[in-house]
Structures are given as structure tokens and as C-alpha cells.
Amino acid sequence: MAEPQSDKTPTLSEHYHLKEKEKPDAGTKSVEVKEVEKPVNAASDEVLETAPADFRFPTTNQTRHCFTRYIEYHRCIAAKGEGAAECDKFSKYYRALCPGEWVDRWNEQRENGTFPGPL
Image 1 (tube, rainbow, N blue to C red):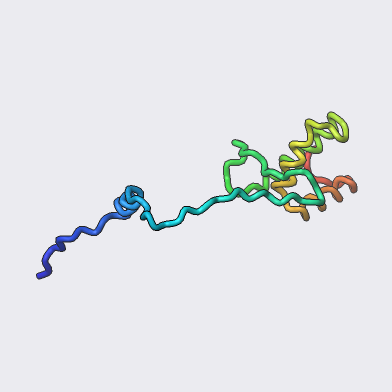
Image 2 (image 1 turned 120 degrees about the horizontal axis):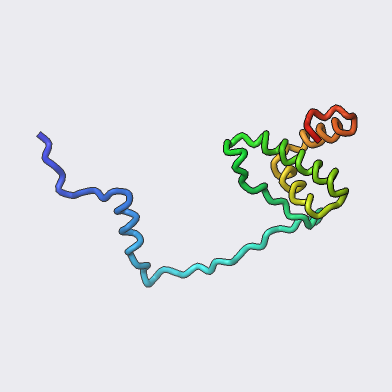
């Protein structure tokens, strides 16, 4: 029969907990960490951020969220006029969420009067 092992193997949490308690050796070198600057896009100064979480779209599939933000942007433009600052956020949101091909197709459909959404 096999005898029980006398040396207990530490669990994963115990293993990491032990590593946290260990102090670095005197012979180790300290490493200086430098902050890296984000590259600036020369073509545009606009920072494209993703849209904030929206409780209306809780699933991973963000197709409906993209379409809704596109419609919200164009409704805002229609209500407040071209170049309204209040509408810029909706523009950033749909551009962050929607594939460019979709936006191009929707713009063509709006120009032709065949856009399926409620503008």
C-alpha cells in the first residue's frame, strides 16, 4: 500500500502568498519603469473612444447598439443642425461601434432615400 506523503504540496494560492512574502535578494537589480507615450495620429487629432456601456444593449453582440447610435446621431443633426457640438458624442460612438462598410452603405441609402431606419 502507498503511504501518505509527509510533504504537503502548497496550493496555488499558498504558493503565490509565499512569493509575496519573500523579499528580493540583495543581489537583484532594480528596474526603472518608464511611461510610454501614446502615438499621435498625424491625420487626425480626434481621439476615438469606444461608446460607454448602455443598459439597453447588455449582450456581447453590439449590432443593435451600433445601429441605434447611428440613428441617434442623424436625428440629433436633423434637430440641431449640421456641426452641433451636442451631436459629436453620438458620432464618436457609432464610429467606434460600427464597421466602416456598414456606415458607407447606410450613408448611400440615406442619400437614395432607401434607409430602413427611422430618421
